[in-house]
Image (cartoon, rainbow, N blue to C red):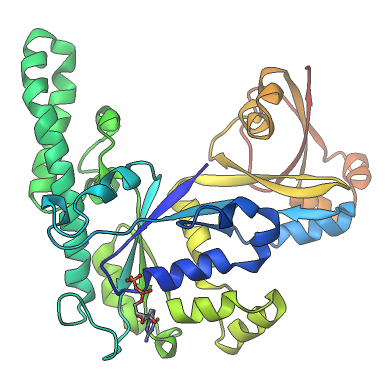
Length: 360
Ligand code: GDP
């Protein structure tokens, strides 16, 4: 499944945030595996449509889409040269679909900062530099061979050129992801190198509880990390929220004028960053959100439920969530002529409530 690696310097609040992730009570029941792996946390994608659908269909349970977070410890200054745990973290990051960097913004004299003072922008630079150095090594190793190979095989020339451009970008201190977002580089040809800084980046600014609703506290940082996305939360506050039952947690959030917890925001931004969307299925057994890439066709969507569904796909019976809630039942949607039968070419739309027909 989809996973996001959490990185950051020591003492920035990673463990605190991660404890909140794994304590998430709503999930404990549905995802028992989440407690087996100590460095893995699962967060539900908030989706109020699921509750409305479950009411309509009298569903016995709700299964939300989820985002998996992996705690990746060990990046310190010099890590790519063997400091701290050295570059053990690299293989763990390689497996992730995106990188989430936790940045300390909170000020607390009792919590020591590894470099002596709280400076979010230099922390971001420190971590990015380690990732950039790791990528430079990867490309350097590959370039030696590529240059020889491209002389014999002209088809490799574009790959060589892409690698040289990526090398220059990194040498200039830029991550490949931000360069690609700014259309300054294309990474399509370098996929096999699994470059770390080519992965989508999300920044988590860990602020004091008292700055949670103060947009000014992180405005400059948000500007600095563009075009990467960022969210602002307090890891300590998240830990507190995670220990409450959902009703009390909502109440505490609203006392701060917030609608979503930081973890929920993180799941949502993770989804957006990775270009994902959901489709919905509903029945008496369960109402469920399924994760697909934006632009997926109906058979591909069916394949996320079961690979047999994709192979034996016949058609999809689709009603839109909006119609369903407005008209009150599938029967009413049908008689209004708004139920659709879609074939193999159909591109799934956000809010599609689907029943697949297939051969086995
Ligand atoms: P890690 O090394 O990045 O995993 O950092 P920890 O999660 O262990 O946090 C380091 C210290 O900072 C702990 O004493 C936390 O209680 C404290 N801390 C974490 N988040 C916050 C926060 O939002 N505000 C304050 N004041 N302290 C925090």
